[in-house]
Structure formats: C-alpha cells, structure tokens
Length: 293
Image 1: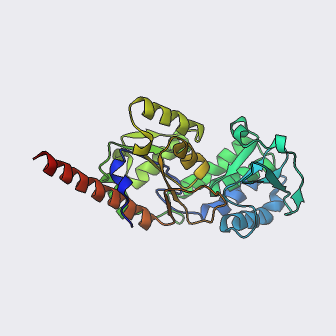
Image 2: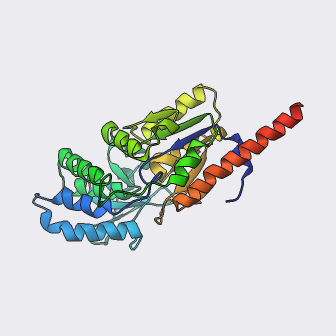
Image 3: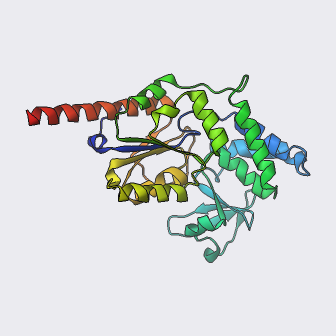
C-alpha cells in the first residue's frame, strides 16, 4: 500500500457495512429465490438468478454503476454528456427521451441505482411489482442465514483490529440496513464499540449528505473526511462533492466512471489501508512532537 501524503489529514472515516466490512455474495441467489417464492412470478426464478449473476459478474452491458427506471421498466446507462441509453430486459436498445432521465431526480424515486448485489434484488422486486413486505421478508430471511451455519460469513479479524487501532477523531458507521439487522451484524462481528457514531437506516445517499453537512458545521474540512464503501452512489459521490477523500472497495467491475482516491478489491487491501493511515498519522505526530521540543 502506497503511503499518500493526505493520510495524515484524515480526522473522520465513514464506513459502510455490507460489502465493505465483510464481503459475501452467496446470499444473492437465495435472496432472489425467496423474493419470488410463492408469487405468480416464481416460474421466472432461474432466469432472474441467471441475470442477477450476469449483472454481478459484468458479463453484459448493463451492470453496477447503472440504473433501473422504475416507471418505464428499463435498464438505464448514464452517458458522459448527460444523456442516457435505455435497454429492455432482453438486451435490446430502447429509444428514450432525455427529459425523463434527469439523474438528479433519483431521490424522487424514478431511478434505482444498482450499486451492489442487494440493489440487484431490489431491482427485481420493482420489476415484478412485488409489495415491500415481500422484499422485507426475503431480506430478513437471508440476513438471519448469514449469521448462522451453513451460510455464516467469515469475519476478517485483521481488518477489525486495524479499524480499532485507526487513531482518528471519529470512526463512523453508516448503513442503510434497518436497526435490528444492523445491530445483529455488528454484534456478530463484535465491532460496535469501535465506532464513535453508528447510524442504522441511514437513507444514503441523502442521509450521508445530511451527515456531511453536520460535520462541516462542526468545523471539519472536506479533505479531513474519508468515506469507505462499495456503493459509489450511496457512499462516495456525496463525499467527493464536498472535497472529501474516497475509497471504493468492491470485487466487482463497475461502470461508474468517477475517479476515486483509492480503488480496492479485497478486505486485505482495506486492512493495509487502515494500517497505513495509522502509521502515517503516528509519524506526523512524532514529527510535531520533535518540532515542539
């Protein structure tokens, strides 16, 4: 891990949880199956699972970093010139009108960003017009499974230790997961005590934008804030807009064209980053101590 000079400036590190502090994606197939189980669309299960895997692996034009238009049932790719390209589910290109695809309207519920495997399943729930309670039941089912054999995910002890020793003013956890499941996951990983602030049901990206505003009001500068996450739209874009530092961690290919300060793929790399930040800050503290003597 290259030691960057900006490491010493970091005072606040904001962590996402799912896909960031642990990496596990076998849940996705089960999540899709539970979502369609007992519905009129159950016969589409294998096709949905196959498409979900293809999106996750980057085997087709549409993938992470793109959008799903809820009203028009189209897969939407944002182009650099502000226009958009639409695709039907069979992969055919669909002419679209620019005015219907204003990407700043995502908070109005027209567009669903596909940033991680959880988002893929959410997209299917909208495609099949399933009630929110069905998605919630499937979600809670896979979350319980992820904490017990045979589907229990592995906790990365080295990373957890490195976060605990990070040595910044604020370690913040922000997750869109609802409080009950979020708390269970932190308890399972035994890391709740490591964070000065924890926010469940954060409602990112809007919730992150609000939190960043509160940090700036407290006197923190943009360049003193680092956000670490696997979903650029939720975790990184709001921080970059205020001049903050960003670390994108994901094992999957992404179509998001934004340049991040760091691009990682594994938890081992994230552990090394945490230790590099700590080492850089300790050296700076020692330098300042010697200067004051």
